[in-house]
Structure formats: C-alpha cells, structure tokens
Image (tube, rainbow, N blue to C red; front, side, top):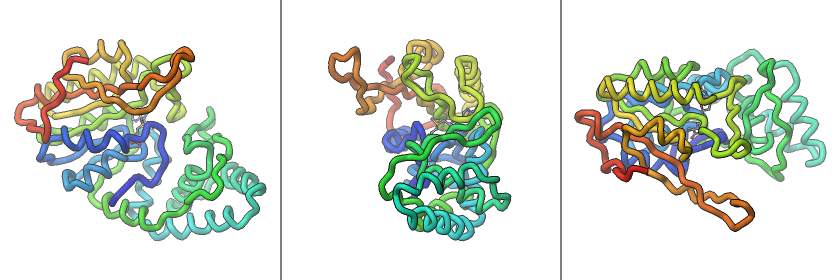
Length: 294
Ligand SMILES: C[S@@+](CC[C@H](N)C(=O)[O-])C[C@H]1O[C@@H](n2cnc3c(N)ncnc32)[C@H](O)[C@@H]1O
C-alpha cells in the first residue's frame, strides 16, 4: 500500500476514499497542485485510477524531497538511516540537542541528504509542522515523541514506485491548473480559510494564503470548468467559501474531529467538497456528486 511518507498539516488520508469514489472513472492525467503529504494521490494510485500524474506544491523543499525519493530512494534511505541512528542512540533528554544541531547547521547540498534532513525534521519536530522564518529557515521546535519512526524503508520504496510516472514541480497552483486538459482530473486541497481567527494554521510556506488567494483559486476553478476539466476542491465550510463556489455542487463532509464550542460540549466540524463534475461534459464519476446545496 502506497501511503504518505510525511506528516503534513491538513493531510487528507480520511477524505481520500470519498474523493476516489467521486473521481472520474477514466483519468488521462491526474493533477494535484497542493500536494502536501500527497494522501489523495497515493490513495488514487493504489486504486489504479492514476497512470500519469502532475504533482505540484509551492513549497520547493517539499517538491525536492519528492524528487529525491523518486530518483534516488536508496540514497535518501541511507542518509536518513544515519540521522535516525544518531538521534535514537542518544538519551531521550539529549535528543533535542541533536535535533537543533541538524535543524540549524548548514543545509546539505546533495539532493538525497537534503531530502533526508527534511524527512528527519518532519518526523521529530513538533506535530510534523512545516514552518519557515522570513529567511526561509525551518524554525519548528523539537517534538515530544518517545520513539518516533524516522525511517520507514518500505514506505519510501513503495512511494518511489508510485512516483515513477509523476512529473513534479514547485509552482503556484495557477500554473499547475493551467496545464490540465479535458479528460484529466484535478484535485485541489488549498490551505483552508480559517473558521475563526485562531482556529487554523495557514502558514504552510513563507507566504500566506489569504482571501485574495482563495479568490484566485476560485477563478482557476472557473477556468478549469470552462475548459471542460473535471475538478474537486476541499475547503473549510466557511460562509465566504460557500459564497465563492455558489455555482457549483457542494457537499458537507463530516470530519469527525470536534472542537469545544463556547465550553458547551463538542461540535463536529464539517469540511466542504466542491465539484464541477455535473457541469463538465463526459466526466462520469464513480458516484454522483452530492447535490445537496450545502
Ligand atoms: C492543506 S495542504 C495540502 C495537504 C495534502 N492534501 C495532504 O494530504 O497532505 C496545502 C498545501 O498547499 C501548499 N500551498 C500553499 N500556497 C500555495 C500556492 N499558492 N500554490 C501551490 N501550493 C500552495 C502548501 O505548501 C501546502 O503543502
């Protein structure tokens, strides 16, 4: 089973089966312009829905890591194995020191070692967050895992096989969407519009994804629709997002997660799945898109 090899904020592992159900049955080329941990790509791949793929994210270090896994997985495994041994051989109270040493020393040049560093930091940092400061330096503190699995060789090798036919690019979503054609399928998972000022962490890369970007993304979605390219998009169920996509089919997907609402118990959170499939000719999906106007 190919699975994500990174922890990533907003990982879509749980939504993946639902997206696979709604995706067109025949996909000439699969596009995922906000790749992150790639949970949906790996899930569709596993179901045999994806042959060729164009995968992109604006985070260049992230995309370079995918590239190194695709092109030199054994080199990545060797370099990550070394970091993992060094870390785990230390007393738990000393591991933080080693983490900061790796995080703050000069970044390696070789692609495999660079990727191994990102993977190491991802598995040992606080909550698998990815955050950089204004100089582009990774600045997440050490995490609190007792015995993290830093190197999973099988997972990396399986991922490599899934990535063999994938084109990888570090770019903005607008460029990535521009490359999609009729007969392809696009899944978009942008940083979500926060439901409240404090509820979401939207700084995935050094530049924010603000409301202007949400509007730009809706324009890209309109453009895909006009060109006959089937697409699904997830976002938070925020009134502004409902408004942006009011011309489209929307489905509320319960995420099971719960937050405390005003201290009065826990309310489940819904996410929004937007679809243009009923508007795009010939985009027969595995399941009818939810018609409930959310
Ligand atoms: C919600 S995450 C995607 C999570 C992914 N679906 C998963 O399962 O792990 C959003 C991603 O969008 C990327 N991103 C932010 N702004 C972007 C932009 N303008 N163009 C392309 N990618 C962007 C971030 O780097 C981040 O990886």
